[in-house]
Image (cartoon, rainbow, N blue to C red; front, side, top):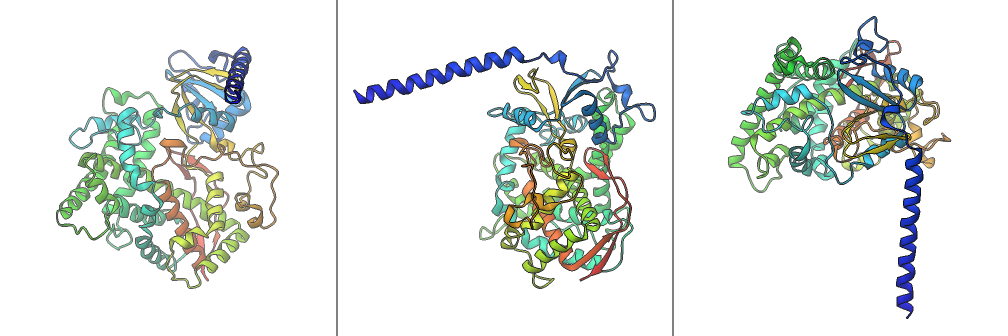
Length: 509
């Protein structure tokens, strides 16, 4: 009898919960406003608000999307609808709403509207690529390649395997930094991260610091330029009239030329590695590239596409993030000194190799990187095509809508961060490690998303973070450096870039 009573009691509780949920949903729906009511700038038929982005005469600047986004937020509120050239975009400014966007894709395949011109370029070249690659592809094809490629990149031990190769490259880089001060450190950073990405993408050294490779027409110089040209072109090709769908425009040709060079290097490297695999020893551990080439669920075209994606997304993202870290550390010498103290503790000798155990204990270095990515995220936010209807800020936003989160604006909002424009790594540390710094604002988990979120987040996040942490430890262990330029801002390309040279003066410790 007792069992039956308990069973019925549980049933009654469940029925009551469902009833209250229905009542709550009904009340919420009563207060939900329609999609048409979402505020936003007015436009004209066909072109929408495109004219507002015209240079000089327009009120919005496509190269300063963080400033443009703040203008829209101040004028229209935390949810803004805009129609540009027939495409409707909803800009999302509240982290609470960003959480709803990502929750709505649970159990579904995330989709986004991105790299449209690159997708056309690759799918037109079926002899080279099997898909458009991880960056622009959606649907089941994206899911297939993502599942296979992330098997190694998402495993901490697989990524840590590269520490052994990273250390000598960093030591070489430290030696170069001893030679002189720099009017612009950015080009050298690009070479460093090309070299590090080359280890993963091709399992080969690019020799980017050699006298031959430092020349303008060298392979490494052209690869760096190809990544920059493509990232710059994609933003304009996707956001403008998209005439490239009908004929090859000058900018589309420029992007295609950059991609042709990048893929030619990738094809050569992949084929060389594939030839070497015929005589590989089963006793040694396979590299990332070798793992992909021996995966029966991937073919050579998939691997070439992945190699190109890593070059395209990997070099500029890590280069620019590191440039911002140096900018903030060079202007905040107390923070730099604290990072040095941690580096000196973890690396008693300057030439000590960095191990996984050292990275595990580099808490302040991690906080410096997090604070850099808060103040200067990789991009303005994260794009998604909604997989279901979602209520955002009290408005019904239908399935299929293109939404773009505005994390770059949120990251500097006093509503979510105390003293938001100041570089304070301590805000990311637990109370015992924060050096007495206290904040009244807990950090919202969806406020800062530099690598995206969920199953479509940056596939090489662990590798990128590892490379940048090793760099910060090594550079601060060996040098004190000061910022030699004025205050700088970012230019919104596909990837945010400093708008002035990275001018630094180094002093050996």
